[in-house]
Image 1 (cartoon, each protein chain N blue to C red):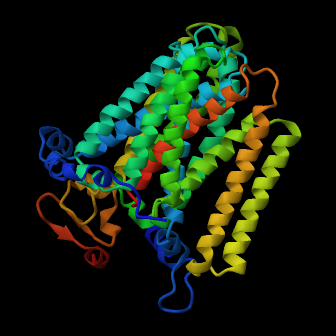
Image 2 (cartoon, rainbow over the protein chains, first blue to last red):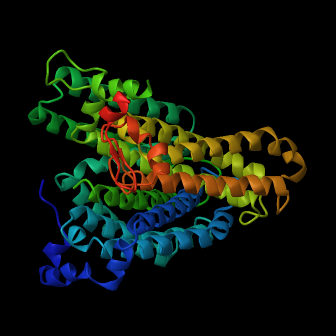
Length: 280
Length: 212
């Protein structure tokens, strides 16, 4: 565990420039009116909603769930404009909010994770998921290359989130999202077995951390909670691996599904890290 | 009466016999990580809920998926919407439970509840009246006016719910601060711990109001 990687670690010479950002016209404009900052935050959330909804539906289709009566390329064709509006929206509003908050973000490891997720999200969405959906699930050479790059950045961001004190709890959001994605993606006995396993783990963790160990015994709680976090991850990833090689009616193969999982979770990671900036 | 109930909810319910005992509400608010996880879950589920309902609304407006039947879109997407809405409501109730008195005296939260009620009413009207004739326009690229009106109302109302939700933590309007009578009245500041102050600088604390 560590205090985490911040932009200050990477760019210490930028410190005075970052401090000066608070007095720039943009920062003054954002912080000026009574509801200025909050209004841009609303814009950020609405953009995130637009992006989230379109990314989930497009990638669920690649996983063989959601609007399965239409081909992936139809889903892509209908959602691409809205998705782009969402991406542009989060970048523009994010820059405005960030400039008004620069020093805090400069020293925040959650912000580092968020920026890594943003970069990975753009790569995985525009370089991989959209071309794959447009090709009805076929993964060409360039999407494979972009997937390797975007996937590596995503996993590195996830690793920083997991190993940084004060924000590592946020990984539960990514785990929860991954757990929920598998419910519409799995079928029949696999689905019920998967849900039963998840419920058993949740009950076991609750009993372990509330009955066997006292809730205020942090010294013992921390390793137990981390163990359960790992167990959740193993259970979810194991089920996801099974779904990669199963399923009827969906286009594309195991790599297509892997792309879809990553392309949803990367935005969840970004939203999680964004929220955790406030808690750090 | 409401004030007494909220006071019990925030400070009384679950409080142990010792003087330093905490109520359930105080335990939730003071939890090391659980409150943060709840708030994060509320936001992430909002992304799924509002993101999916928006796609259905855009189809009803005839803006996207024009070649796809409305029922195909709604049947595939609405289960996700309903599921995420349930989680938004559960996490939202828990968040309110952590600070019921503060929320009761916040104009943005009260406005959020009004818009939420209107959005739910709009859903009921859509399912009760507009959807009754869906068989005749299900495949239309541009659904009839009533469906489009309902979709537009849905987009506007959910946006207002989100705006009010985001404004809620900000203390621009807060009981005890100098603010218009209208806001003091909506927020019921006269019954709040901080009392109320109008724009003329006249101040009334809760004790004064009780004595009158």
